[in-house]
Length: 72
Image 1 (tube, rainbow, N blue to C red):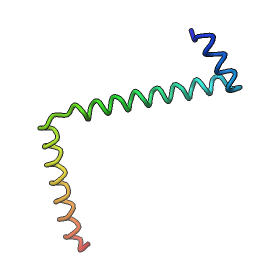
Image 2: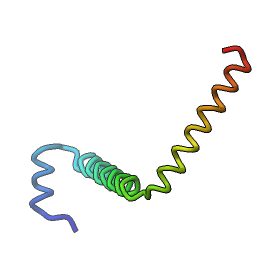
Image 3: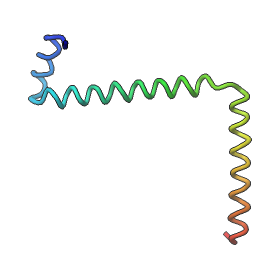
Image 4: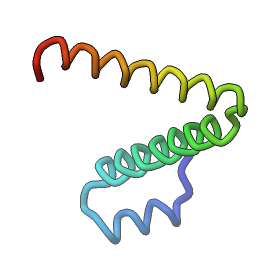
């Protein structure tokens, strides 16, 4: 059950309670996703970072080879 004071505040600020709650839930969900992504990227090991860097260099090299082969 939602807090009555909170509902009163929502009603004072907007005439569309559902829209306010929907937007609040979207913001809350996005903040949780952002926090999870931040945690994931901050907890990667040095080996993971080195592996990703190696793949990025390989992909860049391959793209250069393809573009060169196409005359670009």
